[in-house]
Image 1 (tube, one colour):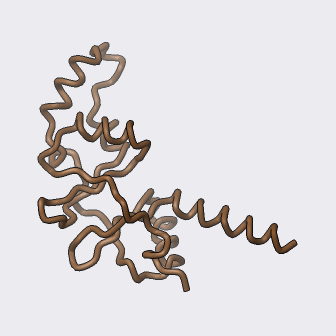
Image 2: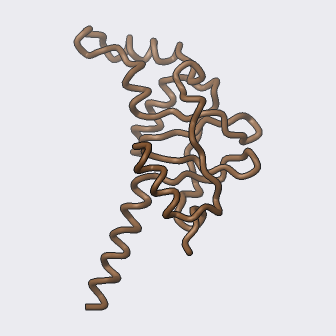
Length: 143
């Protein structure tokens, strides 16, 4: 049986509640990610910031705000004000079939993986797509 720990990403890009929206926007852009777990100084999981959350906190381009002004606004918005705090999480020993069911049923893009209150990884839709491709390749090789 494959467990969440076998599929999850263990190297997770994180931020702190006190970081600002500009830091989150930069991290997502540079690392090409859509989810950032938010942690405390001692690595306890406190929330999640998604690409959608950032879009919600961004002034519309229709307002004709220049990039410099948007950066100033972003620098004044702490992540704790826009992050999601009541986030579903999962343990590393859960069967991946159960994890996939949670993602699918709830239409989540990710599940932070928590062990003893600490963030130990993240499992995303992309992880399941990689698994599906790997399984399809294995099936093709058998034919």
